[in-house]
Image 1 (spheres, rainbow, N blue to C red):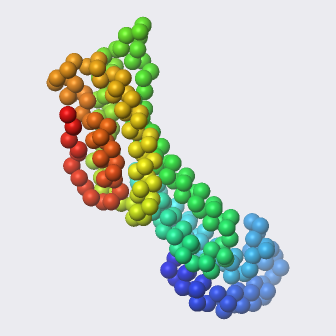
Image 2 (image 1 turned 180 degrees about the vertical axis):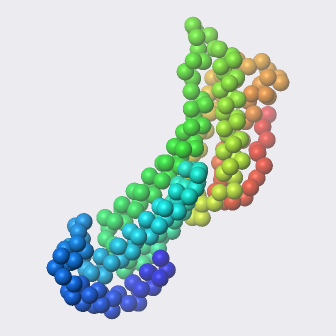
Image 3 (image 1 turned 135 degrees about the vertical axis):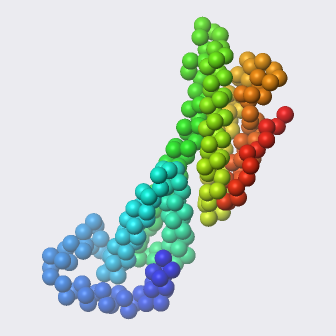
Length: 237
């Protein structure tokens, strides 16, 4: 992206002329193919720039598939996607060459990676708080309730173990992810805890199954994405 920015900042007119001459020297069918996908109104340089960006996207997509963890694959694409958007935003020449529609499309794709990451990690954690099957004939089924808490604790600990060293390089995107995650997890867990923790026998049983208070989880989320591996937050009493 730095090379593209430099080329656009310093050599736009020269490259425009080179690609224009190159384009007019090609057979008619070649020109027709190069102007597909509604790019016919764009300059030769803009079309070549877009092709380079599309190739870069393909390379990044292929690299993302090397990660076995789908959530990490999405983080990889988010990091690179935000970096590219910032470079485009910082270069009026690149932005103009690409056009607003393609910039908006990239922003939309970045949001999709955000949602995909959240779905792969945190929406699965929410499934542990599913209340289906916890009430039978108006009574709380304690064995099922204990399993829900155990499942939540185990998955939360696994998320911490796996993702505590992951890095999101853009500070704004860090904040956006943390706010988004907290907005989904904290209210749901607080509600579940408030509704069902009283059905556990006070003392050791409560400590065994209720390992985290909402504040613990919130503190953990606030520590995500900066690459600082930390120990599991202690349960607050």
